[in-house]
Image (cartoon, rainbow, N blue to C red; front, side):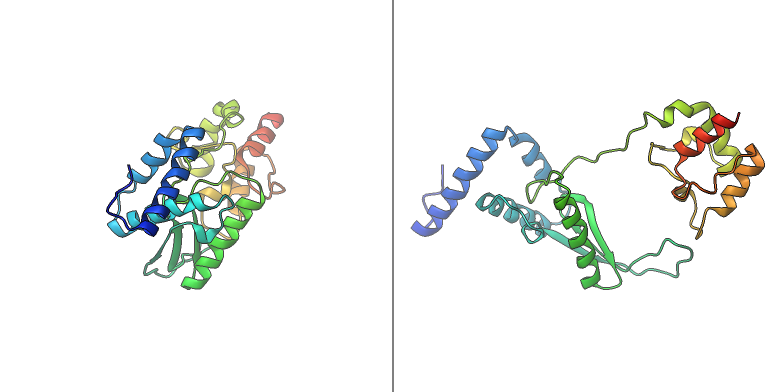
Amino acid sequence: MPNKSLDASGGSVFRDLLGAAEGDLISRRRVNSDVMSLLSLKTNPLLHLKAGAKYLLSFTKTDWQLTDYPIRFRHTNVGKTTGRLKQFPWSVQIINWWQVGGFGDSKQEAYADLRKKFGDIKSNGKTLPRPGTGLPIEFASTERIRCFDDIADDFFPRVLDMNYGDCLITDESTLWDFHTEESNEHLHKTIWDAYRVDVSDIDDGNLVKIFERIENRQ
């Protein structure tokens, strides 16, 4: 029951929030998932408070914007980077929804990057978690890549100098995932030397596409 020691106005607001929360959670049968998401935040108490406050306030509206979510900024000292994978000193993440974040050379740039990514997610009609909670991490399918296990077992050590069984590979894995160079040209040459197959026109370097071509040439 609500705390009777609260003053009239505060108690009323608190009861309204709790009532809305109870009705929504029960109707959607999401009590366990939401509560566990909040309890799983093993960080400092301030982040717990921010997540909890945004969680309660989320029941006052249904159209959630980025400003309705608790966020955390981080600054790190980055060294000199080479190749196409630039490191940024500033990052920002949505608390508990850690998969969504932004990066930049300044705090403002990081937030702008996060705002764009959040806008893309929302405009694409993807499910938004309630502020203060998160969504489970989703892994890409491996259905297609598993059709080429035999080729991959041979390809990885010969081309990438790696063991296929030691890597987490999905249908979306590409050559770009295995180096920091500006292009895939050095791997295109290695693939040609190993299989006499030209894959230089596969711009995204998708492994499934490459394996299909190798299979069709054998």
